[in-house]
Length: 250
Ligand code: PEP
Image (cartoon, rainbow, N blue to C red; front, top):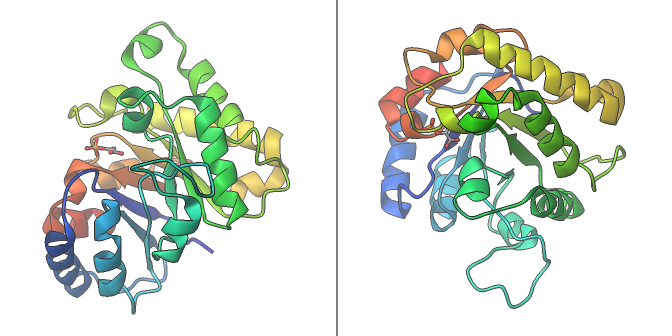
């Protein structure tokens, strides 16, 4: 069972195996295990074994991959399957991160297939949703995140037993230094919780909903204290072990 708050680090295309090992040694020494929170790392796939090895004694730390392909196997050069990720030690996968959606053109239908692929092998997943700035300015935020949630989970069905999480990451806030106010983020998290309740019933209360978008040492505590924000998904500020330790302890 994933303890809340959940503090998740998305390293994107940073920290190869040596840098990942050095980071983890520093972080594991600085952050003693706490039973009241879960820390997740999403390193680049080749660094996964290094991060897993450094966290092997820590039940409060999970390590995952940033992406999977939906097929079980096949001629998909450059891709990894849920099966391969799991065998390599992944305990979680990110699905539909905004960079996957908007840099690589990933669609809701593809996200849905990735959720199915993860669920098929019992690999917990974190489905990311979030609106672009023009959608926000057009008043479409609620419609966009609701569609991404409904379509993303549309094929796993209400009987899904695999653990999963959601992350609300407004695209305009990712890597820009702009952050949603805790009030604005809370409102979207409340909407997502109620949509999720309509889909899976009371189990929706157990699903952590993380906020992401330019979280840093200065704003982490305020965001995490806001209603319905069960954790944080952090990119840039998770790359430095000192900053990340402070955020995890916020
Ligand atoms: C992210 O990559 O999910 C993210 C939120 O990035 P950043 O914290 O750098 O905005």
